Length: 84
Image 1 (spheres, rainbow, N blue to C red):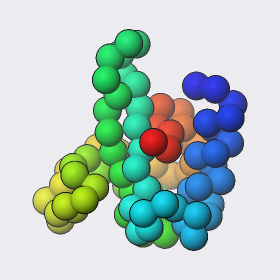
Image 2: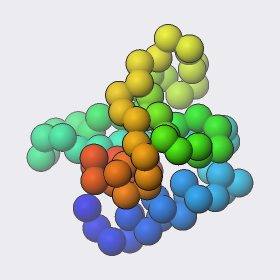
Image 3: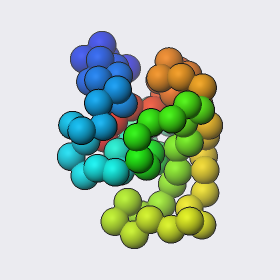
Image 4: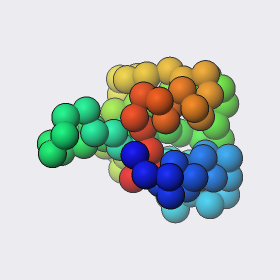
C-alpha cells in the first residue's frame, strides 16, 4: 500500500464533507495479488468502531453484511482497506 493512498484514506475518513457521494465512502482491499479487489463501504460520519459493509453502494440495504469492525483508522488500514 503506498503512502499517498494511506494519507488520502486517513484524510477522507477524518473529513466526511469531502466524500464524493456522502454519506457513503467506497473502500477496497486486495486480498489476493493481481485479483479483483474486495469492495466495501462505510456509511455516515465515522464513528469508532467503524463498520465496513459489502453491497451495492447505490442500493444500500440494512441487510448488507458487515465484513469488518475497526477500532481506528490504523486498524482499518492494517486490514488492507483504502478508499476507492
